[in-house]
Length: 300
Ligand SMILES: [Fe+2]
Image (cartoon, rainbow, N blue to C red; front, top):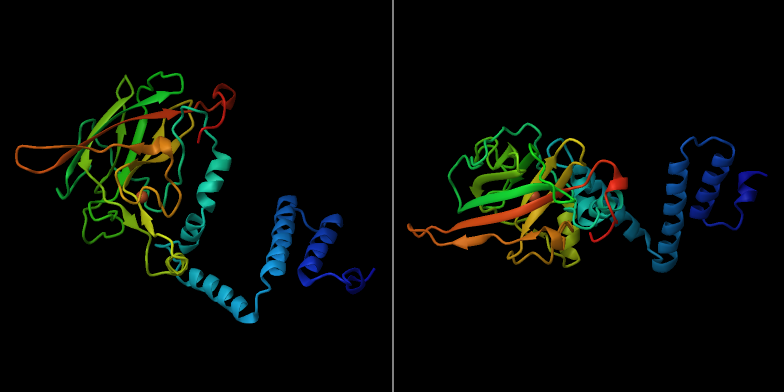
């Protein structure tokens, strides 16, 4: 049957879906997953059109927004990733693909500021290269689900400074590798380092994603946090963030990374010279590579 007759009575979106199905039946579409995704998206787009009945100005506004996201994306900035983060897509897909058993530290997206080439830092050493900010001493232990300490685990840390900025955001202002480093846990899985208390920050406010959130009356804020990537032979690598539970933005993280298990207390301590110091103690619990050993999934 000619396509025009086969598509009689269908909306253009339904006709597009019918063409995808016809192509798949004829073996013209080798990627079944892509076919399934496009059929699902097409069907949901039709439902949106039926519900909202947008006009041409609104279509132009959508195309203009997507065009702006593209214009703001380059080798130093990924506005598309920011859009996925702000819509909750990144965190949702992380949850789908990395379910953690109860007791394991949850995964979160790594975010855009990770550097794989950060230097090694000895246990008890400092990540702070410019001496700015209130001091923070971090201690912790890397464990398996059963509580076994993971001797020699690799602990990568990176975080923003007391102005909410990462060193690679302002290479002219901060020393390279400021507030980032790699440590090796001791035979008891313990690690310790000195750094400064990070500030929270807002998503970049000059682009289309921020404009979208602002027009919706939504927060751009991210509560203060430390990023960790922890690895040990035989265990799934954990990428996560530990949040300052006292941060006023803790309930409105713009990229949905906050989970109850990731809240921590940055304890304040008076010091003799009047400067505030802080301490943080945490456990980071890894899952074995073999998921059959990882217990019941849930509790994210
Ligand atoms: Fe961050």
